[in-house]
Length: 250
Image (tube, rainbow, N blue to C red; front, side, top):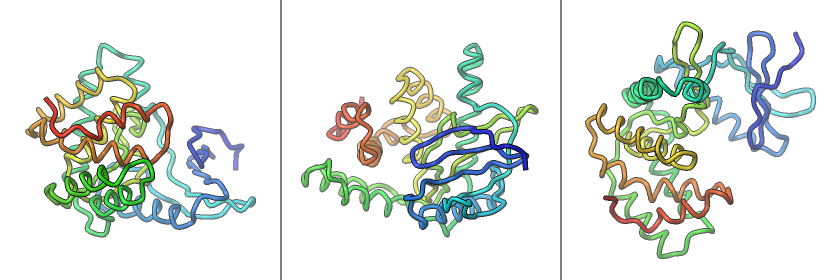
């Protein structure tokens, strides 16, 4: 095999390219169950026919770290292309929303349910007081329960555009089944943490293209923010906490 080339570093993992494969290596203290769940999610998503890199193996490195090996996809991230070609931003955003809607058109009943995942996160949160937890549990329980495939971290850095213009969706570690508007609220939040203008462009296009009321997506934002707050990222804390008490958006 050729020498490893680092593609990206994330919290608790490093991603390398080796020949025509990508190797995601996890830290030694990363839970084995989470590695295997990510691989299982990816395998189940492959079966839906969505454009995703295929898993080749789940293994352990010589140093004892768990790793997942995927097909390598040549290209640039959609995030890179948006930055390089601002004149095509709306075109790229429409493609992005269309791809997310394709994800939401799929069903995979073996995926974990988003409602269960978020209820557990709210219960476990040490950053929320009992009153806020109760309000969030109540809101989440009242929301319509769907069974659509959700990515859970759908943002332009997780989309590779190949030289022929094909789109490929990476990183299914957060995949669940549930309500598409919850996934859209998560994507809106991810944009808003970096660029509020991009977030508003995304929200407008998502609601237009999916024929979804903006208020319906916005009702998910407090729960989405609470879920994200659990990551404990200091620079995000103020914005996320400001969304927790919002009952209705204008």
